[in-house]
Image (cartoon, rainbow, N blue to C red):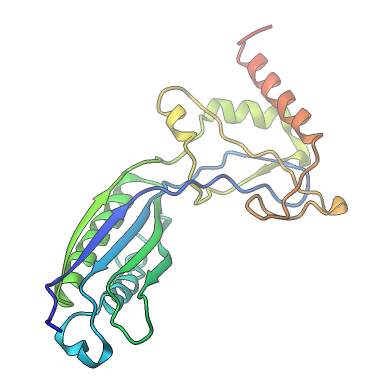
Length: 241
């Protein structure tokens, strides 16, 4: 078997579709949650297949991809401000077809998130540089596609104060910013917006599972509370009498 040409690594960065999680276990109303920008990372290392007996004649896609993963996990904490939230992670890897054959390709998928453009651009630039340099080190080439999608959610201060005053007491729970992905931010680029969470948990009824769980359930009565909140907010903003 002849030695293969250089491997090619394809890096595609795209957003996953992620919905907000439900609130804590009590039926409370969290508000002012700011969601991180959602990004995804996909890498493919392609090459002709070789058996393990001829591994020295070519390059291993799996090894190259594994080192890309290790490198990407050093970006946060070494190249970003420690006071700025950031996420770079690979959550899926698919590689190889048989146990005794050098992997012909490797697929990596993950996510990248930040709350401000400076941090996000740092993450993006480092992902590209690391994928390219590691590709060269392992005899690979690299090409990538980046799709910048969901921006961060920034709640309007006036709307937030109105909601907080309207709810008040124990029914209102302030939430720290969350590293979720939320396309609601597109609305906020055009008009003032408010993103809040309607508490759905209830330990007494067994409603304790998160949104993406196959055990998730909630009390339909909380929808009435949600409608009332929107109604009160609209009245306070003098949208109708």
